Image (spheres, rainbow, N blue to C red):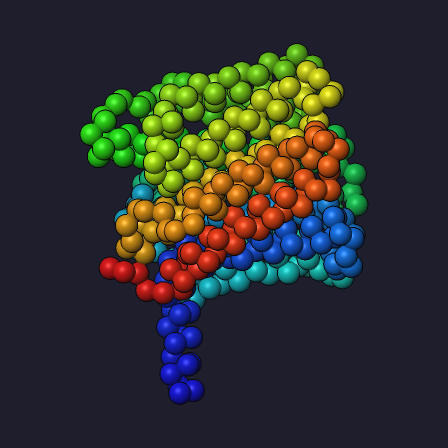
Length: 398
């Protein structure tokens, strides 16, 4: 019996580290709720949670580099096998890469107890190793189109370093001292790149199967301008630009992405939760851009509202959407959302609305909105973990 138990654990680990999406998507399902549980216990209930002294920065950092970057790693390690026909990273090499991500989480959590150099070394090692592996596969295959993702890795690496410096108390000056803004700008660029490839294509293919063939444009000049507009938004925040320049750039970005998401005709996909959730994620990206633009017009619009619409809304919904589709497809299952996943997606949407409502002071219920947002977030990722966790540790159906 003891030998059988050991065999089952060994088999589970072998399966878990057989493809990049498995350990990293599982980690997102576990870590995303955990971060919120610790944060809400600290900020809403005042419980003695042993967070770093810069708890606000820890919370923002871990949402980006604990959750978003882990999801990105799972996605990119899986996608490059399709892009290049290369064998997946697996076994000990994948274990080592995942261990770097885990080491970063532990180091940042213990930020106050460890030397800064050690924390920085452990935390900043993951993205370069991931980037080097991805670059080697893409270059070997001659796949230049997707080298753009190396720029995303580089941007995240710089923002990660800025976060650590800010947590250590360094005065970075201007918006360089607010790395969460720059990090979210990069997240929006990433979403725009990935969604631009998959959302219109998936929608068009699904409608064709339903006998409702329509033309949905993919990566047109408008789409390229939309992505470029987000790069300009990043530049505005990077150099702390304000006034007419910032208003013009954010306004143009909001308009272009509004047109983009309307052209994708998401209203036609409401009967398929795996599809409409992709459109919901992009609608929340558009909401974030409009809130960012309006905050420059009117001080009554809190700037933090766009941050939460982007982070809790667009990023989280897109992460769940992509993890769901990739998790099903790459484990040999039909592309049909498991029972309860529609509720998972809706819970994140509710969490977004609740957190933005708290930012606006709606009904003077700040604490209540915080708790509602936390429950929505924890429920959304908790349902994902419940439904997809077993799939990620078990062999594929095919």
